Image (cartoon, rainbow, N blue to C red; front, side):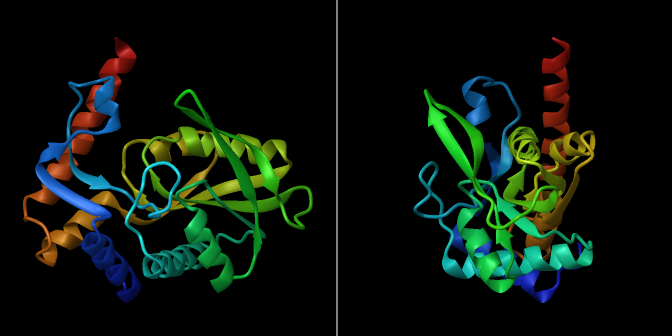
Length: 232
Protein backbone atom coordinates (compact mmCIF):
# COMPACT_ATOMS: atom_id res chain seq x y z
CA UNK A 1 0.00 0.00 0.00
CA UNK A 2 1.24 3.49 -0.80
CA UNK A 3 2.05 5.62 2.21
CA UNK A 4 -0.54 8.38 2.38
CA UNK A 5 -0.06 11.29 4.75
CA UNK A 6 -2.78 12.24 7.23
CA UNK A 7 -4.49 14.71 4.88
CA UNK A 8 -4.55 12.20 2.02
CA UNK A 9 -6.03 9.57 4.33
CA UNK A 10 -8.68 11.99 5.56
CA UNK A 11 -9.61 12.85 1.98
CA UNK A 12 -9.69 9.23 0.85
CA UNK A 13 -11.91 8.27 3.79
CA UNK A 14 -14.27 11.19 3.17
CA UNK A 15 -14.60 10.45 -0.56
CA UNK A 16 -15.66 6.91 0.27
CA UNK A 17 -18.04 8.03 3.02
CA UNK A 18 -19.73 10.55 0.72
CA UNK A 19 -20.16 8.03 -2.09
CA UNK A 20 -17.84 9.98 -4.37
CA UNK A 21 -15.94 6.70 -4.75
CA UNK A 22 -18.01 3.57 -5.23
CA UNK A 23 -16.93 -0.02 -5.77
CA UNK A 24 -18.89 -2.90 -7.33
CA UNK A 25 -17.15 -6.18 -8.11
CA UNK A 26 -19.47 -6.95 -11.03
CA UNK A 27 -18.61 -3.58 -12.56
CA UNK A 28 -20.34 -0.31 -13.45
CA UNK A 29 -21.88 0.63 -16.78
CA UNK A 30 -20.35 3.95 -17.83
CA UNK A 31 -21.16 6.53 -20.50
CA UNK A 32 -18.67 4.77 -22.76
CA UNK A 33 -20.97 1.74 -22.86
CA UNK A 34 -23.68 3.72 -24.65
CA UNK A 35 -21.60 3.50 -27.82
CA UNK A 36 -19.42 0.50 -26.90
CA UNK A 37 -21.58 -1.92 -24.89
CA UNK A 38 -18.89 -4.62 -25.06
CA UNK A 39 -16.23 -2.46 -23.38
CA UNK A 40 -14.87 -3.76 -20.05
CA UNK A 41 -16.91 -2.67 -17.04
CA UNK A 42 -15.17 -0.67 -14.36
CA UNK A 43 -15.13 -2.13 -10.83
CA UNK A 44 -15.14 1.41 -9.45
CA UNK A 45 -16.99 4.68 -10.09
CA UNK A 46 -15.82 8.23 -9.35
CA UNK A 47 -17.95 11.36 -9.13
CA UNK A 48 -15.89 14.19 -7.63
CA UNK A 49 -18.47 16.86 -8.33
CA UNK A 50 -20.49 19.44 -6.46
CA UNK A 51 -24.13 18.83 -5.56
CA UNK A 52 -25.05 21.91 -7.60
CA UNK A 53 -22.93 20.99 -10.63
CA UNK A 54 -24.87 22.05 -13.75
CA UNK A 55 -24.18 18.74 -15.45
CA UNK A 56 -23.67 15.53 -13.52
CA UNK A 57 -24.62 16.07 -9.86
CA UNK A 58 -22.15 15.05 -7.19
CA UNK A 59 -21.96 14.48 -3.45
CA UNK A 60 -18.95 16.56 -2.41
CA UNK A 61 -19.17 18.90 0.55
CA UNK A 62 -17.22 22.04 1.55
CA UNK A 63 -15.14 19.84 3.86
CA UNK A 64 -14.07 17.74 0.89
CA UNK A 65 -13.03 20.86 -1.03
CA UNK A 66 -10.88 21.99 1.90
CA UNK A 67 -9.05 18.65 1.93
CA UNK A 68 -8.71 18.55 -1.87
CA UNK A 69 -7.21 22.05 -1.90
CA UNK A 70 -4.77 21.10 0.86
CA UNK A 71 -3.73 17.98 -1.05
CA UNK A 72 -3.35 19.96 -4.26
CA UNK A 73 -1.13 22.40 -2.39
CA UNK A 74 1.05 19.54 -1.18
CA UNK A 75 1.37 18.22 -4.75
CA UNK A 76 2.39 21.68 -5.96
CA UNK A 77 5.00 22.05 -3.21
CA UNK A 78 6.37 18.51 -3.45
CA UNK A 79 6.88 18.83 -7.21
CA UNK A 80 7.96 22.51 -7.16
CA UNK A 81 5.23 23.47 -9.62
CA UNK A 82 5.59 27.21 -9.30
CA UNK A 83 3.09 29.24 -11.32
CA UNK A 84 1.55 32.69 -10.97
CA UNK A 85 -1.86 31.59 -12.22
CA UNK A 86 -4.23 28.73 -11.48
CA UNK A 87 -6.99 27.44 -13.74
CA UNK A 88 -9.62 24.93 -12.65
CA UNK A 89 -11.40 23.16 -15.49
CA UNK A 90 -15.12 23.85 -15.44
CA UNK A 91 -17.30 22.74 -13.92
CA UNK A 92 -15.99 19.98 -11.65
CA UNK A 93 -12.90 21.84 -10.40
CA UNK A 94 -14.56 25.24 -9.95
CA UNK A 95 -15.64 24.93 -6.28
CA UNK A 96 -12.32 23.34 -5.36
CA UNK A 97 -10.43 26.22 -6.98
CA UNK A 98 -12.29 28.79 -4.91
CA UNK A 99 -11.03 27.08 -1.76
CA UNK A 100 -7.50 26.72 -3.13
CA UNK A 101 -7.43 30.43 -3.97
CA UNK A 102 -8.39 31.24 -0.39
CA UNK A 103 -5.77 28.88 1.07
CA UNK A 104 -3.03 29.96 -1.33
CA UNK A 105 -3.79 33.40 -2.83
CA UNK A 106 -3.04 33.51 -6.55
CA UNK A 107 -4.47 34.72 -9.81
CA UNK A 108 -7.40 32.62 -11.01
CA UNK A 109 -7.97 32.07 -14.71
CA UNK A 110 -11.59 31.32 -15.60
CA UNK A 111 -12.69 29.41 -18.67
CA UNK A 112 -15.97 29.48 -20.56
CA UNK A 113 -17.50 26.02 -21.02
CA UNK A 114 -20.39 25.68 -23.45
CA UNK A 115 -22.77 22.91 -24.36
CA UNK A 116 -24.91 22.44 -27.44
CA UNK A 117 -26.63 19.35 -28.82
CA UNK A 118 -25.07 17.23 -26.09
CA UNK A 119 -21.53 18.35 -26.95
CA UNK A 120 -19.42 20.29 -24.48
CA UNK A 121 -16.33 22.30 -25.19
CA UNK A 122 -14.11 25.00 -23.67
CA UNK A 123 -14.74 28.12 -25.71
CA UNK A 124 -12.27 30.61 -24.28
CA UNK A 125 -10.91 32.59 -21.34
CA UNK A 126 -13.46 34.73 -19.50
CA UNK A 127 -11.12 36.20 -16.86
CA UNK A 128 -7.33 36.22 -16.56
CA UNK A 129 -7.08 38.62 -13.63
CA UNK A 130 -3.89 40.66 -13.77
CA UNK A 131 -1.81 38.00 -15.47
CA UNK A 132 0.67 39.31 -17.99
CA UNK A 133 1.46 37.72 -21.34
CA UNK A 134 3.52 34.54 -21.08
CA UNK A 135 2.50 34.01 -17.44
CA UNK A 136 2.80 30.42 -16.23
CA UNK A 137 -0.52 28.82 -15.32
CA UNK A 138 -1.22 25.51 -13.56
CA UNK A 139 -4.31 23.54 -14.58
CA UNK A 140 -6.32 21.75 -11.88
CA UNK A 141 -9.06 19.16 -12.36
CA UNK A 142 -10.85 16.39 -10.51
CA UNK A 143 -9.71 13.36 -12.51
CA UNK A 144 -7.80 12.42 -15.63
CA UNK A 145 -8.89 9.53 -17.83
CA UNK A 146 -8.03 10.54 -21.38
CA UNK A 147 -6.56 13.93 -22.18
CA UNK A 148 -9.11 15.54 -24.51
CA UNK A 149 -10.54 18.15 -22.13
CA UNK A 150 -7.11 19.02 -20.75
CA UNK A 151 -5.65 19.48 -24.23
CA UNK A 152 -8.66 21.60 -25.18
CA UNK A 153 -8.04 23.87 -22.18
CA UNK A 154 -4.30 24.01 -22.83
CA UNK A 155 -4.95 25.11 -26.42
CA UNK A 156 -7.28 27.89 -25.23
CA UNK A 157 -4.82 29.10 -22.58
CA UNK A 158 -1.88 29.07 -24.99
CA UNK A 159 -3.91 30.99 -27.55
CA UNK A 160 -4.44 33.57 -24.79
CA UNK A 161 -0.62 33.70 -24.49
CA UNK A 162 -0.24 31.85 -21.22
CA UNK A 163 2.29 29.11 -20.51
CA UNK A 164 1.03 25.71 -19.38
CA UNK A 165 3.50 22.99 -18.40
CA UNK A 166 1.70 20.93 -15.74
CA UNK A 167 -1.70 19.58 -14.73
CA UNK A 168 -2.70 18.64 -11.18
CA UNK A 169 -5.63 16.27 -10.51
CA UNK A 170 -7.19 14.53 -7.54
CA UNK A 171 -7.25 11.05 -9.14
CA UNK A 172 -5.33 9.68 -12.11
CA UNK A 173 -7.42 6.81 -13.47
CA UNK A 174 -4.30 5.47 -15.23
CA UNK A 175 -6.05 5.10 -18.57
CA UNK A 176 -3.62 6.92 -20.83
CA UNK A 177 -4.33 10.56 -20.03
CA UNK A 178 -0.98 11.30 -18.42
CA UNK A 179 0.86 9.64 -21.30
CA UNK A 180 -1.14 11.63 -23.85
CA UNK A 181 -0.31 14.89 -22.08
CA UNK A 182 3.36 13.91 -21.91
CA UNK A 183 3.38 13.69 -25.71
CA UNK A 184 2.53 17.41 -25.69
CA UNK A 185 5.19 18.27 -23.12
CA UNK A 186 2.76 18.47 -20.19
CA UNK A 187 3.42 16.84 -16.82
CA UNK A 188 0.62 15.23 -14.83
CA UNK A 189 0.63 15.18 -11.03
CA UNK A 190 -2.04 13.50 -8.91
CA UNK A 191 -3.02 13.29 -5.27
CA UNK A 192 -3.83 9.61 -5.86
CA UNK A 193 -3.61 7.11 -8.66
CA UNK A 194 -6.68 4.89 -8.68
CA UNK A 195 -4.63 1.80 -7.83
CA UNK A 196 -3.06 3.58 -4.84
CA UNK A 197 -6.53 4.61 -3.70
CA UNK A 198 -7.94 1.09 -3.95
CA UNK A 199 -4.91 -0.41 -2.21
CA UNK A 200 -5.52 2.01 0.66
CA UNK A 201 -9.20 1.09 0.85
CA UNK A 202 -8.38 -2.62 0.83
CA UNK A 203 -5.73 -2.22 3.53
CA UNK A 204 -8.15 -0.27 5.74
CA UNK A 205 -11.01 -2.73 5.25
CA UNK A 206 -13.22 -0.37 3.23
CA UNK A 207 -13.33 -2.63 0.17
CA UNK A 208 -12.82 -6.33 -0.49
CA UNK A 209 -9.14 -7.34 -0.70
CA UNK A 210 -9.71 -8.46 -4.31
CA UNK A 211 -10.58 -4.94 -5.52
CA UNK A 212 -7.05 -3.58 -6.20
CA UNK A 213 -6.32 -6.48 -8.56
CA UNK A 214 -9.73 -6.10 -10.20
CA UNK A 215 -8.87 -2.46 -10.88
CA UNK A 216 -5.46 -3.33 -12.32
CA UNK A 217 -7.09 -5.98 -14.53
CA UNK A 218 -9.69 -3.46 -15.68
CA UNK A 219 -7.05 -0.88 -16.60
CA UNK A 220 -5.22 -3.48 -18.69
CA UNK A 221 -8.40 -4.79 -20.33
CA UNK A 222 -9.60 -1.28 -21.18
CA UNK A 223 -6.24 -0.39 -22.73
CA UNK A 224 -6.44 -3.51 -24.89
CA UNK A 225 -10.02 -2.65 -25.86
CA UNK A 226 -9.01 0.89 -26.89
CA UNK A 227 -6.06 -0.47 -28.89
CA UNK A 228 -8.47 -2.77 -30.68
CA UNK A 229 -10.72 0.15 -31.59
CA UNK A 230 -7.77 2.06 -33.03
CA UNK A 231 -6.63 -0.89 -35.13
CA UNK A 232 -10.11 -1.78 -36.39
